[in-house]
Image (tube, rainbow over all chains, first blue to last red; front, side, top):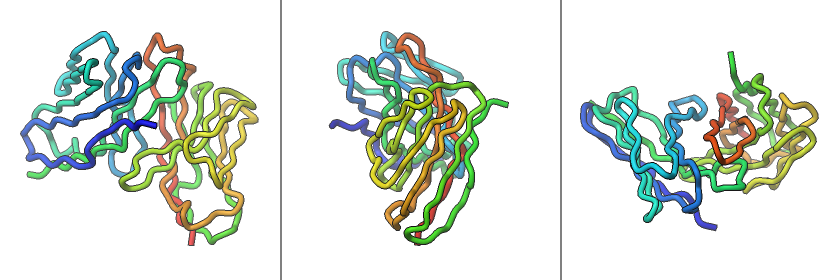
Length: 111
Length: 116
């Protein structure tokens, strides 16, 4: 079957913006999620967006959703070294009880 | 404190020696699942459970067993571990989703398993 696609790595300089992209598979997914995995830890929900929204902003985080292209992005403004982590995109198609995760994007923030 | 706990956190074992990784949640969640995380492959679901005595295969169930005798516990059993099961394992739980509201998966801290 199709996979939720993400690029594996992203490297940015501290203070710059980071944009992590994701292509999901099911256009009927009601919610789309971003999870963050810090080194040595499990995943934690970072933010989510409802499918009838184009954008959601939460402090330094901006989520953009393009339903036509099934494209989701996470923008982190003023990226800090503490933002270094793996970021997973996830979708939950209707009728599916467990989300489908992408492979994760490793964000590396360097001084 | 709401949490998912896993034990052990680290385990080194030999091929063929049966082992169990425990998972427990204190949030009264209906859904629980097991994932393995491997470099370049992301998270792959092994098994999931929608409630007590209800379990189903995920994407990579071969070589694993699970049970759900109590709502809070969801152990992962490797009857005869092999080196290709060396991985980082995560247990997760969530409320029963309706598709109307978002629901969060809560993850345990992970168990790093090495099979030699």
